[in-house]
Structures are given as C-alpha cells and as structure tokens.
Amino acid sequence: MKACPKCGCKRALIREFSSGYGEVYLNLETGETDYSSIYEGLVSKRVRKYWVCSKCQTKLFRDNPIEINKALEEEDSDSQ
Ligand SMILES: [Zn+2]
Image (cartoon, rainbow, N blue to C red):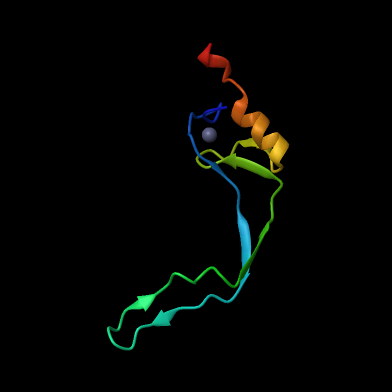
C-alpha cells in the first residue's frame, strides 16, 4: 500500500491521547523560550486500534507491527 485505496492520500493517521506535564524553559539573558522538552513528561496512549487515511478516514490496517509491515509491503492493485 503506497496510498489510500479510496482517495490516494499518502498519509495514514492514528490519534494518541497524551497526558502529563511538559517543560518550557525561559532564557533569562535573551528572553527566548525553549520548547524542546515540551513532550518529555507526556504519556501517550493510542485510543484507536486502526490506522486510518488522514484525508477520508478510511480504515487502513490494524495498529500492530505485523499488520503495518504487511500493509506497507502490499502492492496496490492498480499499480500492476
Ligand atoms: Zn483516503
């Protein structure tokens, strides 16, 4: 699968629910804020079991390594 079979979009999407705290640093000398640690304290949890097309929301494949690999290696039917 190189693209969504329905609309041809090349991106798959899965949502994660995150909770926790991120840290933002303020440089007292320059006044710059540094957001590079913003995700470090977050715990993420996937709330859905399927990857879907990011455009049309078609269910593409299950969220496990075997199914993902299989889907990525699969040839699209219209590419032969
Ligand atoms: Zn699609």
